[in-house]
Image (cartoon, rainbow, N blue to C red; front, top):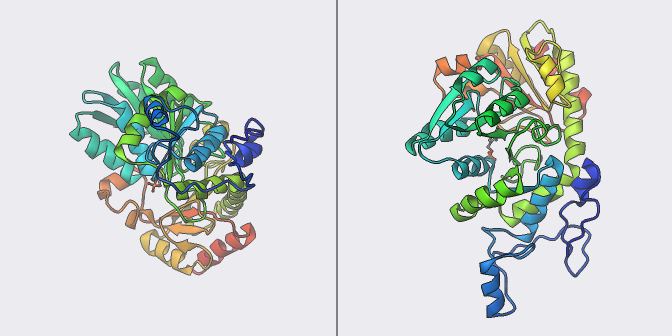
Length: 397
Ligand SMILES: *Cc1c(COP(=O)(O)O)cnc(C)c1O
């Protein structure tokens, strides 16, 4: 068991080899250990494992499983953290990260532009358990400085927000949090693990919905919390393993194999997004083209510093509001209308009427989610075909 060669190579090498546990059959492709439980050699061995499970000793799949462990080690090797805990979905990961570190009476500062379900946990669930949450405008550093207090236990933010692609100065916010002894928890789903510099910027816990770029082919839900061994095994794991949010071995196997191609896929998707953003910028039918590495982005300099590349999502604002947005979406031939992102298939979403429909209009306005806003997720199709599809749909308006 336990081939570890390549686990310390460069990023793409780690994505293929890190974490591998080869069984006595010597299989090339990682085994899918589709088992809930494990057999002990003796009653004494069972007792010993319950007293203290060693490395590669498993008890029950809700706590851990060899295939899940391979996935955890491989994604930790990519992100550059000591450890990781894999969960059933991205939201199980967000929930585990927050609930495992917070208790009644704690204070949290969070950016306002969050994924809807994250907002529900921070605004509704945490409040019921006596945790106070202050929301701030993410890019406004003064607002973070004013909101963080001596009793702040954690800050929570999305490094790149969805769908308006606002960038938060990670290093500055992490420094402010650490100044009062608070933990920095970053939900980095939109930026993807490939372009992540979150750990380098000082985040204590990084959370991914692996449903997005890691699977990247629209099959399984999954999530992961990454951080130091002490935080993951000492704080996150006890909460996560007893509350039932574990990743299934089957999904872990899909995600593990997906990591082998993650870097190649995200690079290709990013190239397609960047190509289209440049081609669409300044188009007469568009009020705005938002892409982090486009010079017109409000935080272009920060985006260049903090993100190795601009990512796989481009957001457009149609000049003609909702009617124009709908006509544009219906005229697209390659982009499918759906609400996910980071899939191999390019996806177009109208946030105001779908993913962000639940928000009151004033709130949507505050977040910049206007009726003309359309989010584009770039897949693995040919970049020229995708840009052509977008330009042709704009011509039909
Ligand atoms: C999708 C997403 C989630 C939730 O992930 P699921 O896998 O759907 O549970 C959380 N945060 C962000 C930023 C997301 O994009």
